[in-house]
Image (cartoon, rainbow, N blue to C red):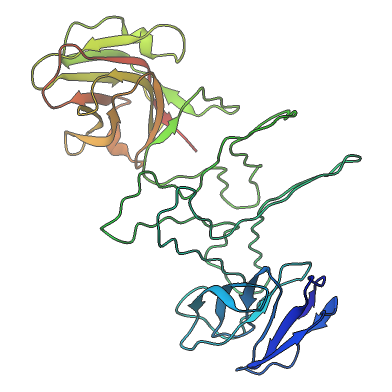
Length: 378
């Protein structure tokens, strides 16, 4: 491994196999070679470094050092059964890599490992790994700035079960704590004092390399759009032919109000002070495809203690099956609710979607629908 760095003022420090040596400067290019399985080297000079080790029992570390080379913070993760000292380097133009020639069965092989343990309260938070790409040029163009780039390259003859460029995980690993909101991926608000021609919270390029291609693929869980949704290639859709209010107040509007989104017409049902608060069923006919999602734009003007269950009629068990829940909100919300494909949800082209307020209602609350549809999403 070859490390390229610039000297720090006040000298630099080098430690090889437990022998500490102070130097006035350190060469701009330093080659570390020949370390045996127990050997390790560290270069430090008032900057943060990170550890790497070409060993199947790799001990990858985040290492901070002060001007004298003393450790301020250090933590590690061990791969395999043993702890092997790492090579610690200062930031610079060094290329860092790790090769694993032995099979790893207990955990991932790790090229760079960043770790922060926040043991006291901190309103600013903590970041395990921070990547930044800055541009201060005043002439010419810069094609791309990438704060963090993740690449998974399967370049051998073997089979890879799953190749992922970037993996986001979130845990709450103790019952004593609370996470108010958890997200595996979070796109913050884009800010600009200059000009951004087009801003994207998430941009997915065309996916054509696979036998089956999905630009976005989700498992169970509601998909919520906080604003208008635009599709350049329309999915198969069906809208209800009629609506039945089994329980609830006198409806306002007609079924035509839920057949087109954002057309200015809606369907409204008041809640009643009884149990259930309301039971509204949207009846579909003539469906010529197998649906796999309920899509609706609705507004429940209720309280946070009341919930509406969105259900689908199962023609095999002859009962309604819950698909999702809908809570009170301040305005209309769009939800795309996937459900498992199958012939059980339709019969002769017919289907029923129910919005059910199964608990006691409040006569001052209402439910509004702008759109209800059954879709087939590829």
